[in-house]
Length: 527
Image (cartoon, rainbow, N blue to C red; front, top):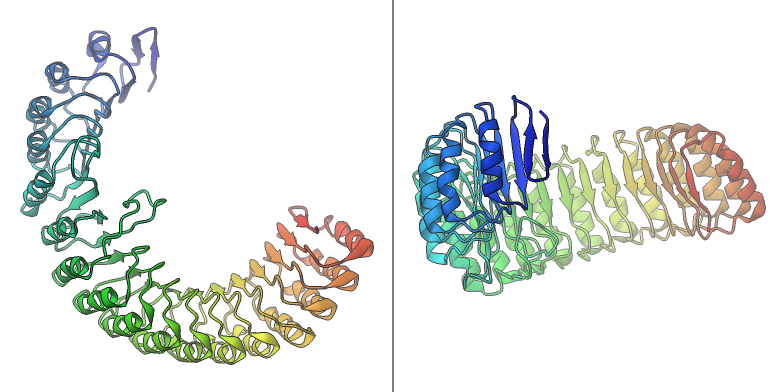
């Protein structure tokens, strides 16, 4: 396909499949382009063309010959309800149409309902995008009810414009077998209404993160318990729910309890994301009880929730029934050694685990010893993060033994664990000889010393797949650096080596610089 716009004229080949015209006059396009549009046209994009209701009549004539059109984009124009009604009469004839986008126009409730009524009759339609149009709350309710009984699945995007409507919320309503609901409005009634019309929807996202493009910004849907109960009560009807995201919503224990009661009905749930809330130990206890019914759960994210040791003990018991679990993130929860011991026992039932995040939980040496025992059952584990846990030398020794069973391990995070001395580092280095698939190793700030560095260098012979190695602030000195330089000759895939704050001196620097001859991909940081 060849398409060029030059001096207001459209130049293209006879087999044109895509026609895009942005920031221009639709009249010019229509006059110069009509005779070029063939039946093979698949995509028509008329974006920011000052397109008005009067132009829709001309467009209708154009669409009459585009019988194979699959995508129509009319974004950033000036179409109102009148134009949307005219457009809807034309769309119903385009049997190959899959996507229609008219966001940032002036389409209200009437126009939106006309468009949805037309496109939902098309068997191949997948998406109708009406974001940033002045559709009222009542209009959203109307659209959701229209979707309820449609035979063909339609993904509908409805985003209110805060400058044109009193409803200041983002909402994506979907129905039946469509992919997901994404919502975070201030009015929890909108969410519950959407859920009521979408009982088989497999994904629901309610997230107040500013950086998440599919969710709302700066909205706390669960601030009031009564609001949360309205939403969660509807989950009992969503027995096909697969993904539930409630991250960063300031959910506290009483709200978590309401959620836990609803999870008993979500037996098909595979992903539950509750990161960055404050469910506390009481909420974790209730959640653990609800998770016993979610036997197909694969991903659980509970980082930053203040669950403590009591909550961790309860969760460990609940996870014993989640035998399909693949990803578990419990970081930054201060679970302590007691919680770690309990969770380690629960891991024995999670033999399919692939990712475990256990950062900053103060598990200590006792927790590390227990965890090492639990890891013996996670033989397929490729990712393990245990940073900032004060495991000490005793914990390192135990962990070295447990890691021998994790032969698929690719990423290991152990920074800032107070190994303090050579014994733990030497034993750990010896254990890593069994982890021949290791690609990333974090050991910053562990005071492994020169003896630990020498032992680690000896193990590098088995780390031929290693790509990233962090050893900053470990007091390895010149002796350790020279030993590492010798071991690095086996790590031909190594790309990143961090040795900041190790007082390696000129002798160590020269030796390491010489190792670059073998590690041609290596970028080394020494200071």
